[in-house]
Image 1 (cartoon, rainbow, N blue to C red):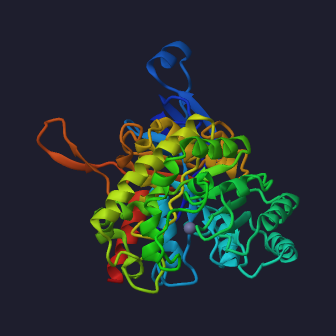
Image 2: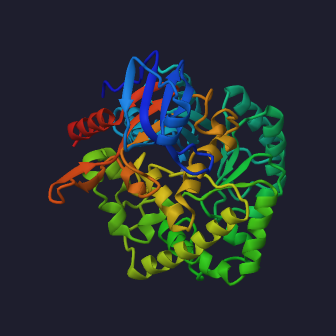
Length: 486
Ligand SMILES: [Zn+2]
């Protein structure tokens, strides 16, 4: 792949755009936005009233984007990403393929979640910050070493990760990780001052649940996915059948379809768990999108973008095959899908409860697993938050400023504001009306004559640290790459 590098202008102007600033306040506009030296230098209100009353001077630039009818949002943050460097899941040009799809969907920051390629990712982080590679900003979570079995080893592991220079830690606690070890990690992470804290995927086989995690004294912790939360509300274990085997992924995901049904019988306890998380400032990153194939396998598999943008290697990695993680759809039944459809209803009710009671949510995709590909999946996650009953303005906040707060990035947590690094996306259409306008495949539109249909939508431009990326060019690059490797 080549081309589509970010272009830096002396004065980049976005003219006549509507602005959603990412702080959860209503959209306004039109505005002109001036970007200089990688930062938002000016936001000028050019609505009719402001023009009449203040006669503002409109900024000029050496590049002007006419954005009438378009919406500007802060760049999105995908808080749960696996960049497959160690395997060939993304084909020979692996990370670049993923990075371009992210940028093409307005994603300017990704939080990578381990898998032992920390050093390469830290190198990408550096190169991206210098605009030397086509990639979003990276927050790199160090992979927790599975061989850390004791409190001493846990202490040593935190030290090593700190020396490596990671932004935080990702852990999937195996059965031998105890609450005491978690506390050591908490202390270590705090002393080391890891800005992005700790992200934890509480495996169902773990001895820990969400309460252990939230009481571990971690300053900054996010619980990934949903595991450990309903489990914490149950009086004992889930009602597994006698032949259940956690290591058999058909079993694991089939029975996970019932965990929220069961927990929902103890509604007060679930709310109690969530209240405790809220009180302790534990973030919840539910990654609803990555499980969608369980409620509708054919839908996830047949999304219109796969034929154009899913590289063969990734398609093969998604396809059911015994012995490969997260491809357990050998005998996925109507009853499994019904269970998962109901599960989503219950799960989303609690996501909404968490939100409405002051909990901090973030948006993550867990790409690339289970037919979810980079960029597209995060937009789908926004749709799922809306499905959970959260207003799109708040959904944008969840996917932008909430994430930066969680990553310890004070500047970007302010959203679109004068003086803040210019990480923005310019959307052809209004995502608050319909998040689907952000998909790289766009949306159908009728012309004013009511007869002609055209293809519109999509994130038109992404700006990262002031560098401008043309999303159509990025997508064309990816499409060519996919075609070359069929
Ligand atoms: Zn993951």
